[in-house]
Structures are given as structure tokens and as C-alpha cells.
Image (cartoon, rainbow, N blue to C red):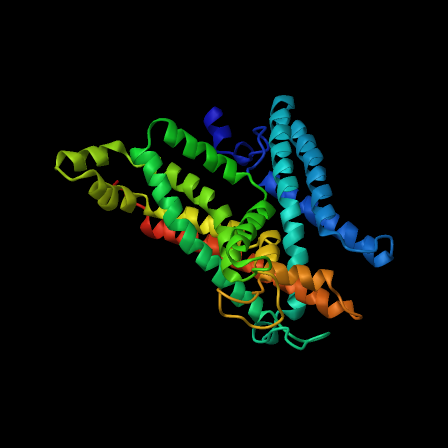
Amino acid sequence: MSLALRHSGVAGNAYANGKLHKSVPWLLLVGSWVALILVFALLNAGGAVKDFNVVAALFLGTVLFDVLIVVVSRIVEGGRKAVDRLITSLVITAFVIAVLPLVSLLWTVVVDGLARFDVEFFSYSMRGVISEGGGAVHALIGTLEITLFAALISVPIGLLTSIYLVEYGKGALAKGITFFVDVMTGIPSIVAGLFAYSLFALFLGPGARFGLVGSVALSVLMIPIVVRSTEEVLKIVPMELREASYALGVPKYLTILKVVLPTSLAGITTGVMLSIARVIGETAPLLVTAGFTASMNYDLFKNPMMTLPVFAYTQYSQQGANPVPFVDRAWTAALLLILIVMLLNLLARFITRLFAPKLSR
């Protein structure tokens, strides 16, 4: 009898065995989202809601999913499994709530930033433009030059500091360096800008604003990130690799260069890319140190230099009689910054896969 039931269609049905199919929760989640989106669309068409709010629809749809999955699970699977489904659905709800602000931000920036995402925006500066037209090529070039020079300052200092802390550092000096690196990690960005401005003002006098000062300010923010990320990567290099190198008579400095650094190259590169992505959108220190200009400037060592964060800020804060073109340029600059940061993160992941140690199976 049991064998006959096992091969029958009823026994093959997951619901008859008191268990939901694994696709049911996902179908309920997607269906809840679609249902709430349709409700908001109907309310928007009827005039009850002014703007179609995708974020609110997704949030309320997730809440509806929490209710539906518990009800369906209690009917089919029983009370204990329904409680388990409830906890799982609450975890999914927490994830959705955490992601929704990011989705809302990206959606807003993309929708509003596409208005000026054209050839003119990437080929013209703001020189002589008082209303419509113009572009941000001068800000794009300034951002790339200042950030690249900041990386050239920060990466050697951060890398050498982390090598000292992991391979050589002992005692009070290493503890002091670690303490100050931790303190530098949490300093406000405006403090880094004021430090760089004050440093150059001591030698060049007040009003020294050019690209190099901005690079120094960004390097103050980048160095602790490079140090901490590189230090953690160097620590996970197996000690056996170092000991094998020492056993062959290889000096310590050569072991670091030929064994430790190549093994951790992927992690070091990822940390550097993430530190660049962290500082490329800073506005306050660059507004103080690099200043702003409407003209193209390729020289890091003289005259103010525009950057994308400062460009977006000035366009939004200094609107003309017709604010629409100014706001459009600000949104497009924000969209361009997000795309640059996204490309840097993708590049970091690609380099991690490319240079990661190949483990034998």
C-alpha cells in the first residue's frame, strides 16, 4: 500500500505532504510587489496619489508578503513551520528596508541625471555659460587628476606603513602608529581640507587654492584606509610561506617583495580601489583647497581646479533666473560620479579575480 501511495500523483504533490514548494515564497513576494504597484498605479491614475512611489509600493508589498506567507504556511504546513516562515520573511523585510533607500537614490539620480547626459556635457566647460548649455568636462578632468595624484601620494605611504606594522613593527611605536591611523580614519573630511589649506598657506600665503592642495587633502583621508585594508590583507598571508622562504636563505626584505606582496596583491589592489572610491566624491575638502572655476585647467600646481562634487554643489546652490538647467547639470554630475565609483568597484572585483592565488583542488 505504501509503495502504491508513493508512486501515486497525490504523494508526489508537495502540498499534500504538508510542505510548500520552494518557489511559493518567491512567487508570493513578487506577486505582492506587483499587486501593490498596480494599486499605486491606479491611485495615481485616479488622482488620489500625486506621484507614483515605487519605494512605498515595494515596502508595503513586502509587508503584505509577510502576512501571506504566514497564513499560507499555517494552512499547509502547520504552526511551527509558519513561525519559521515568519522569521525568514522578517529577515527578507529587513533586507528590503535596507536596500530600498539605495534603490530610491539610484532611481532618482538616474531619472533626473539623464536630462543632460549628452555629448555637450562631456565636451564643453562652463566658461561663458550663464543659463542653458555648457558641460562638466573641466570638472571631470579635475576630478581624475586630483584623485590620481592623491593615490600616488597615499598608496606608497599606506603600503609601506602597513608592511612595517605587519612585518617589523613591535612595541610602543607600532602601537602609536596603529592608534593614530585609527584616529585618522574617523576625522571629518572638512578637517582634512583645512589641514591641507593651512599647510600650504604657511609656505605660499593665504588663498593658495589649486589641484595639488586638494590631492593632499584627499590623501589624508585615503592613507588610513589603505593602511588598514593592506594590513589586514598582509596578516592573512600564511606564515608557512614566509618560513619556507627563510628556510631557503632568502632575506626578509626579499621575502616580502617576492612572496608576501605577490600573494596579497589582489587584496591590496581592492583596498586601494575602495579608498579611491571613498574620497572621489568628497566636496568639503575640495571646496576649501582646490576652489572652483568655470574654465578648463590641466595644471595641478596653479590656479583653482573644478571637480565633479564641487561642480554639482555650485550648480545647485548658485542657480540663475532659470534654475532648470542648473539643477539638470547638478543631477548629471551626481550620476557621473556614481558611474565612476561603480566602475572602480567593478575594476577592483576584476583585479581581485585576476590576481587571486590559484588554489589547487
